[in-house]
Image 1 (tube, helix red, strand yellow):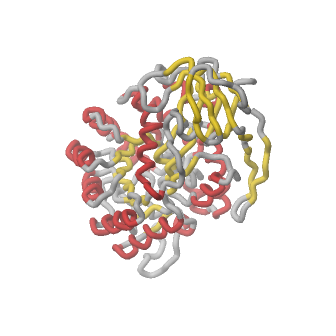
Image 2 (cartoon, rainbow, N blue to C red):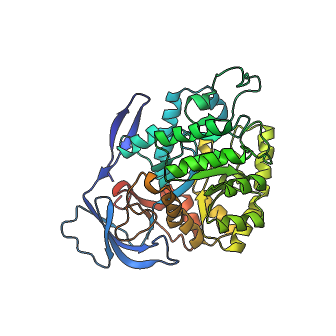
Image 3 (cartoon, rainbow, N blue to C red):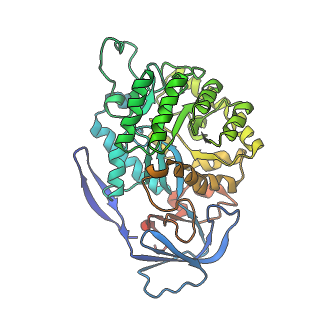
Amino acid sequence: MLYKKTVISSLILSALSFSSLAAESVLIKDVKIFDGTTNGLTSNMDVLVEGNTIKSIGENLDQQGVTSVIQGEGKTLTPGFIDAHVHLSLQLGFGEMMVADEYRFAIGQVEESEAMLMRGFTTARDMGGNTFSLKKAIDSDMVNGPRIYPSGGVLTQTGGHADYRMPNSLSKLHTNDPDPFVRGGHTEIVDGQSQVLTGAREQLRKGASQVKILVGGGAASPTDPLDVTQFLPEEVDVAVRAADNWNTYVAAHVYNNHGIRMALDNGVKSIEHANFISEENLDLLIEKDAWLSVQTLVYINTPAGVNESQKAKFAQAFDGLDNTFSLIKKKGYKKIAFGTDVIADHSLMARQNEEFTNRTKWFSNYEILRQATSGNAALLEMSGPRNPYEGKLGVVKEGALADLILVDGNPLEDLSVLTNPTDNFDMIMKNGTIYKNTTQD
């Protein structure tokens, strides 16, 4: 595949990015297809892509009038992967983020979005951070990266998981001097129903596809233990009602059971993390038909630059993983999202694809692949009218959006082939556009 360099310029960044060359129609010949839903591969198939859509799938499709032909040579074609919990804007180190201006954040976003796409992730649900302009840049082909379902600034209470003010910062009762995360639009520190309502509405005004609220302590934050419950029930309720008025949903960061219960009782539809969830609360989540968005990468590998207190909290969260995943497996619940949740560590984010193999302790290869494709696509559809993209994601089926990865290997037999995208992903296509093609090298 040939690439051309284009200079990207905007009010907030100036950087170089590779712009792909799109063909009017692409015929991918002789592939084994994992369609995103079926436990097995369909062999000796051709896939015709017209524009941004899969036009037809079958044996020996006609090549007449096709702009480009890719020889699959019996390799595996999968849907583009979806990460349901990323932070594209927060991949600078902890120390650097405290002093970085918006230009540095923007450059970091561009670097990370390009890298994530080249790891085969064609769509990402961004669960906290100001990615609104990045999304627009990607959608307009100014920058290469995955589709973004943005949450915008996460809602946190004073002293909550996203309150990163220094210990010597003046109380909010005496000053209105926001920290760098608030100034950059990555967080909103809100207290009381009125402020929570305004904070949720502000993110929806900016284009959030869902609202993110933090209802429990966090591992990466400096002041809040993991057992702490954050916000009051009426505050969670007003965020949910604001999102409901916009025909979308609220996702809640929380580890502990009291916070999980409060979130579910007040209408939250996606619980993020839940490392300490009890069987009783998992039953409640299932009863309420909510999603459980769980991750392994960030707990198995503590991000760089954290202090001893933060390391202890990451270790505590890691200790809860096995119980959470074992309960999920016991219940056989399907609404389990695939995500990574790395912040402040670009080198760890580069290992994003290890999330596939990390999960094999609890799930089959098929279950993991389904989570990262059609499963996560179903989660994204909860945004309803706030879904920023038309078309079907997460499947290789006629009429679906043409997000396709050609894998040298069979991930249903060996998921480790997905952990080396540089060598094992021969083609990466998003929205009908080819971003990588080594089949003719």
